[in-house]
Amino acid sequence: MTSRLRTVAALTAMAIGVVTVVAPQQAAAKGAERLTVSGVGVGRIVLDGRSDDAMWQIAELTAFHEVVFEGGDLSGGRKAVRAVRPSTGELGPRIGLAWDMHHTAGAPGVDVPLRQDLFPYAAGGPMLRTPPGQEVYGTPVDSAWHRVEPALVEVLAALGIPDAEQLLARQLKVRHTRAPGPQ
Image 1 (cartoon, rainbow, N blue to C red):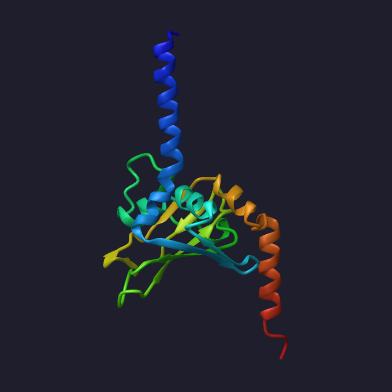
Image 2 (cartoon, rainbow, N blue to C red; image 1 turned 90 degrees about the vertical axis):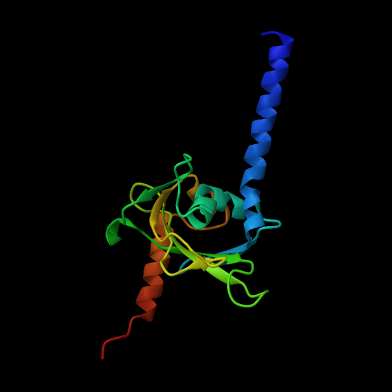
């Protein structure tokens, strides 16, 4: 390989690396400032978009930008695929995602979270549901089920989210303690 060809190859690799690192954070320009990950057995984890890379990793792995801002258009080979809702038994434990979207509704300065349901341990890989009736900047958000990247489970584990068995056990324990006793 000539030195000129090596230089071109090195510059191309560097450009790809810059795009890979910067691209997820471009979603911030559209208004996602914080992400709250919560649920039974999970607690509440708040990620700040200015300082938490995990928030941008989750946004990338769930194709947040495409699902929310592009009407679910995933034709660009993104990391989520529109899916049919699986049966309840195939979903596994649910984790809530609440994206704090700056100035999405109401008076200026009023933030309205965009809510999504994440099923990281669904049969066949993680599933994401965006419930109907939500808007961002006055535009309806695509309400659909999407199959998302399996690497998302690793990001959640790094945040302290338990594995499927532990999370399910915690959720069942909470349900059992909330259930009314014999009358």
